Image 1 (spheres, one colour):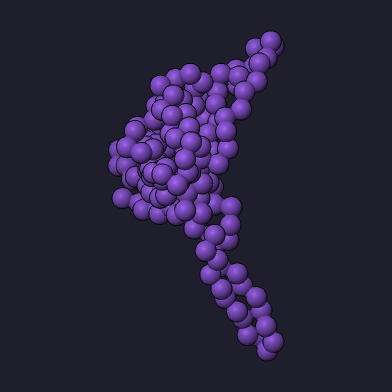
Image 2 (cartoon, one colour):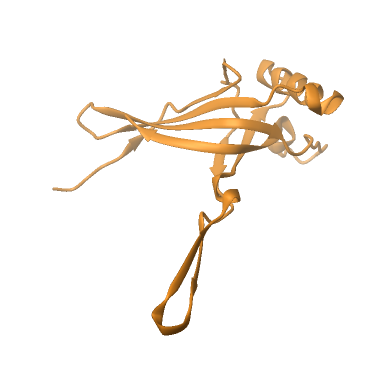
Length: 151
């Protein structure tokens, strides 16, 4: 029997705050830029495997409406980090993808974001041709670890 996946109404929480002021398109993107294991073949068909710690690292990009309450919240956190990194409380959060099966049943594909920091400042542009991207801010984070669970 064919499988279907109906996605929508995702949830993103950073430091216990439910974010809602998302822009258009890819408003949240979680990626894993590094491999988990290095594999190297050896002589006589032997193979070496070595875990790579950076494979647990997750990168999150959020596109938030510029000037919104969520923008102000994240900016305050970012400024706290920049003011004194050693006293900054690392970010934690949750990214939940809601997946329906077409018959009313829903599973939550949950990514737990653990010990994160802001990695770049928010950029700005002024545009007279009506580019709506000038009303969007992009926040970039790195998290030390990301766990995944489907319920």
